[in-house]
Image (cartoon, rainbow, N blue to C red):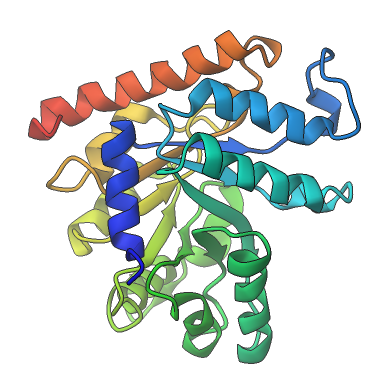
Length: 276
């Protein structure tokens, strides 16, 4: 019997001693100058994974950076390399997929079969039948957009629905009868710690994927105060640019940036729960 997604998440955090998720967002214009060869994105990702394999609980490639330059083969190779170097780490395909049911099923096959991801980010706004295909496999997860980190997220996600903002209604539905297999997470941005605190109180057992630390201005201390669960976990803190381009993309600087983030997170976790 395969290991459930919930167990994979727990093991990834335990093995790495970390809540760090490294975003693999390789902008061709920013790749280090010393990379050579026919597959520079793959080479850069290998460098990042080699530098952080014992630090990262998860890796999150954003599919746009690969498909925009026809580098899907380098994404496949990168995920295979993560499996070799960091076998306990989760791979989250940041694709924000969804559509009507049969198309959603194809998107799920893309994420889980073509790319071999453990989880995929999903837009929930077409409702239950569009989300279910991503939740059908107990060993794979769906990470639903809930309260995003960008400034425009409030345009729709804060609209009141029967007295609660829409993002709270999404979380309510997701954490309830959509999550029977315990393989659902929520995207909750670090730039909105008050909203994160509300979601944590309402849904103490749901894990959050947290973008927005670093380049987007999210405060790590406020995020941890708002989002850590009773076990000192419940979060994957995603950082991409601040890690992968540290020191111009040098291996030592990449490792130091990831390690510094893990240390800062774990200091707060220890203060909160003594979990480490």
